[in-house]
Picture 1: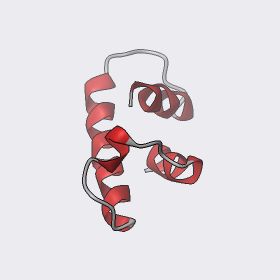
Picture 2: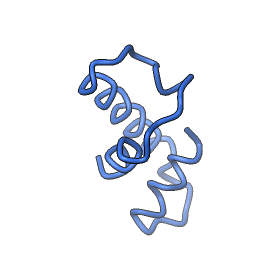
Picture 3: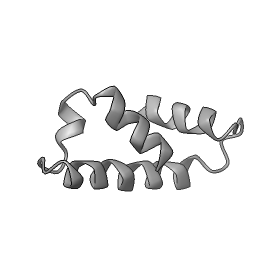
Amino acid sequence: MDTLLEKVKANLILEHSADDALLQGYITAAVSYAESYQHIQEGYYTENAMPATTEQAVIML
């Protein structure tokens, strides 16, 4: 999920790392929401590839 952090930061036009821990928490929550919304098991995306549409939704969340 490190690449998600970089993509979120790019989306926010954010270059510093002062808020990385906060953003990572938001990413974790967004991924959990996506898994719940899609009715798939918790942690599914830690072991499986995330579709591009889901990834974009997580970035936007």
